[in-house]
Length: 287
Length: 287
Image (cartoon, rainbow over all chains, first blue to last red; front, side):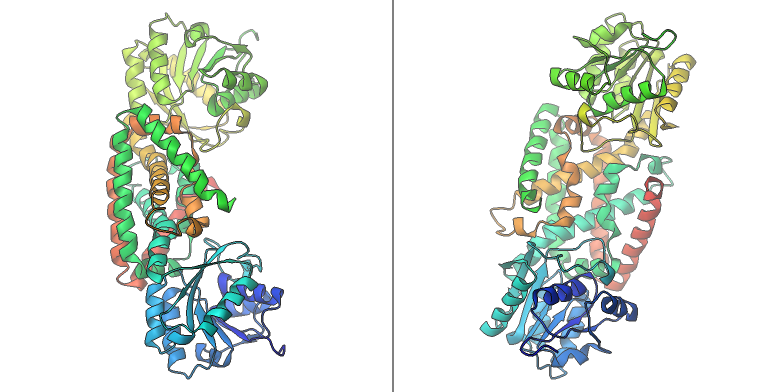
């Protein structure tokens, strides 16, 4: 135990939870890191990776930590919040890093944790998961969305900002609903399209003989996200279905418009060229 | 000029055309390679890459070659076929490597070249283009679809099979309509979704403040194909719009079903897990 440094309990020690712990340690932000995972193996891997110091047996064992970091799938975060709220949690900051924020903020407030709660969402990690892939650099220069509740105290917000700076990420404060609408577009719809495209192609083996031979680089890159964790994505899609449905409708319209523009290949070419240029601009920050 | 070896003229000396020439040379399949490109720079790069030996000034200068390989965008292939048909082309095999086959076969037959024509489509290359990226190994172990016309002679078909074997690809003979339906699913729809998703996200900068900050790995991989050549893709989407529209409808249904299944996260998780497993099976051949 390092005197003066907060104890940060990590509840959910997968890629994100374990990477946060490593980044806290590297920056000197925290002292001891107790950790909990529903899967014993995940917790042991997080200990082996040097992310977690003490194994907790159940989520409510985290109630004495200065900071509780909930890094489980969205559904588990919500049930952890209920447990913490009814277990006399004494922590000065409770936060999460789930990909959908509105239902989590609602659960935090309902659990009576609203003043000490801040929602978070680092834009890092996609396909690889598990603490074996954890890295203290995972959040470096990445966006880290923060969604306070209406009740969040200045103190809790101050602590969470120090925490995000410690992992090298860029803080973007955002309303929870706007967050959910935005990542529905940039992350959840892309996953849904990948999964649906993979499902569509796999389902054609009866009617089309050569689907397998026609699968190449284009298909591979467009369906890459379908390899992501079903557990994580099921919770995300469930928790953000309304927003994703809205974007799906808009996408279908745009795709239909592009097909129609194909009646004039020169016109379509100039539209596609403009999409490509804007696309490169949008991704510039990432390169 | 190597006696006894066919002269193969490459009309369109981009990535695919130049890579074919390099593969023919490496395998000893062909003698001299004359080449034509609409863009002077592309032709010069193909010469510099060692793919093309002789620069042709116009497509009809290819009429004396033993084999004419049309490796331009789909629209250009169709106009080259018309030119060859009306220029007394003496070649014993005329083939193409465009991504849509039915309209090209139709043009070949209409140009009076049906007996000597075979359509081809190697499943290789996606984002990078231009002869500077050409490689003699590009087609190794890849599918090379062949679509003869109803009139194609045994001799032409025999020659095209030797040619495909020389580049190390796997021959898959397929009906042109079935080909177009199949690659609409595995390649053209994936491109359309990537382009439309990129367009959708770029278009939200007015209503959503933090789209740019929310763009990360998931978005990048789902929109990777939007970086492809607008000229090539405009012709493909134009030439295969009907098939792509059919698959787009089906995809939208499947995506909607997944969103609905989100009402029960456990059920959705098991569907997504099954999609992931089948997906890995579908891609196995590629790894």
